[in-house]
Structure formats: C-alpha cells, structure tokens
Length: 164
View 1 (spheres, rainbow, N blue to C red):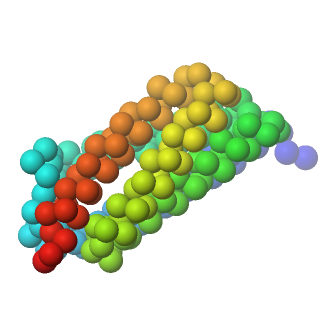
View 2: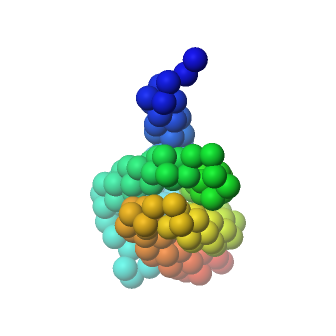
C-alpha cells in the first residue's frame, strides 16, 4: 500500500525527471549549433548575450517543476488538476520541440510556429493552474513573459535570415 508521502515523492521525482530530461535534451541540441550556425545569424537588436540564456532557463525550469507539483498537490483527483498537469506536459514537449526545430533542424520558421503553440499552451496552463493555486501564477508568469520575448527573438532571426 502506497502512503501519501511515497506518492508525493514519486510525483516530485516524475515532475523533476521530466523537466531535467526536457531541459537536458534541449540543451544538448542547442549546444551543437550555438558556436556554428547560430553565431552566423543576424539577430534582433535586443538579443541578449548567450550567457544570459542558461541562468534564465534554469530558473524557469525550476519554476515550472514547482508549479506542476503545486498543481498536482492542490488538484489531486480533480478534473482541473488533471487538466493543469496535461497542459504542463504539453508545454514541456513543445518547449523541447522548439529547441529541436530551431537549433537541431535550424529552422526558425518552423520554430516560430511551435513557439506560438507553446505560448498558447503556457497561457492555458497558467489559467488552469490559477484555479488550483493562485501562487502558481507567480511561477508560470515569468516563463510566459520570457517565451513572449523569445518569440520576438525567434521572429527577428527568421525575418532577418529568411533569404539566406
């Protein structure tokens, strides 16, 4: 028989594991193109230096994991809890897919389509999570803001390099 604390530890491990796998795979795909293809692209005027992305994404992945755990804890056994966790999983998959499309396949155009879907899914996750625990909005909103900024960066890379 599983105790509540055992179930909680398994859930935390599953959420953290999913976030670590997604971020690790995304990071590996990204790293392969950073010093080659990406360096030669024309970028947005507001493009931050490369060193900014690691700390920002690390923080956002930690926030995502905590928000998903709060969704699980507060929404356990309820339809809104299941919905929030499904949206968490979908956005995490779209997040990884963006790295594969942009850096792996070197396709800012397809990455732009993905980031639009990612933005919509994060927005839906934020709304679903807010019904479970209002504190999750404080964890998810910075992610939504960063993806909004990343959408601009992605668009500018596509726009400035589409004829290359």
